[in-house]
Image (cartoon, rainbow, N blue to C red; front, side):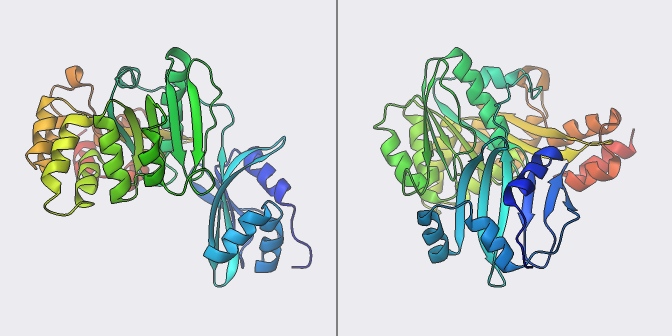
Amino acid sequence: MSTPLDIHKLLKSVVAYKASDLHLVSRSEPQIRIDGRLVALNLPILDGKGIEEMGYSLLTEKQKKAFEENNELDFSIIIPDVGRFRANYYKTMDDIACAFRIIPVNIPSLDDLNAKKIFKEIIKREKGLILVTGPTGSGKSTTLAAMLNEINLSESRHIITVEDPVEFVHTNKKSLFSHRNVGSDTKSFSAALKYALRQDPDIILIGEMRDRETISAALTAAETGHLVFGTLHTNSAPQTINRIIDVFSGDEQPQVRAQLSTSLIAVVSQALLPKIGGGRVAAQEIMITNPAISNLIREDKVHQLYSQMQLNQQVTNMTTQTQEIVEFVRKKMVSKDTAIQYSNKPDELIRILSAT
C-alpha cells in the first residue's frame, strides 16, 4: 500500500458509526465493531508497513521502544475533537496490528445505565469486595465507572484506580481520584496495591485481578477497611468464586475461602446482548453475599451458590443471567437465537423458553 490511511479519520469513523472498536490487521481492510459485530470499512486492504506508519504516529519514543522490546503495548490516548481510546498494539505474522476501544468522555450515571437499585446500596458499604465480571467487551469498565461516579457525586472519598491503561478519567466532585497507569505510574497491579494502603485510600479500583499476588492484596485491602472494586474474565458468580480460589495452592485455599466469605459484598457478571433492531442490552447476574452465601463459600460448596441465588429474590435482590435473558426475550428485545448464543446456561434457558 503506497499511502497509509489517516489514523485520525479512521478513529473518527468509530465515533461516526457509534462503534466500540477499530481493528487494523494486515491483509484486511480496517474493521470496526458495531453492536458486537465486526464490519469491514470500504477501504483498501492494509499491509504491515502502512499499519506501522499509522500506529507509530500516535506513539511517544518511549512507547515505540517498549513495543519493539515486548511486541505488546497497552496505552490510552486522547484525540482532540474525536475522543479517548484504549489501544493495544501487537504482532501478527511479524506485522504490527492495532486494536482501539473507544472510551466515553462523559461518564454515565447508574440511572443512565438503568441499573437496579441494589447498585446504589452496595456502593455505600465502608469496606469489602465488589466484583464486576464478564468477557472482554461486556461493559465491565462502564458499570464500574458509573458506580464510582455515583460515589463521586455524594461521598467525600479518596479513590485510587489501578488500570492497564486508565480508561475513564473522573473529574473530582466530592471525591478525590488518584488514577494510576500500570507501566508508567506503577510497575504492576500487585506493586500498586502494596503501596496503595500507605496512600490513605477509602476506595481502590483494580482494573484486572489477573494473578495470585493481586488477588491476595485485594482481599487484604477489603478486609482492612477499604472498599475494593475489581474485575475478572468470568461468566457467572459461582465461576468467579472458583477462579479466585483456584489461583491459590491447596493448603492456602481454606484461608482464601474464609477471607472471601467475610469480605465479598457482591459479584455482578454481565454480558452485552445485541438487541433486535440495533443496540445492545446488558444481562446482569447479581449475587449478593448474605449469611447463606457466606457459609457456602466458606464450606467449599460453591456448586450450591446458583440454587441459593434463586431463593427469596424479592428480599435478597439477587438475579440469575437466565432470568434476565428470559425477560429480554419475552419483551422482544432480544431474539431467541441470540439469547441462547450468549447464555451461560443454554440448556436451562431453552427449557424455560420452551415452556412458555
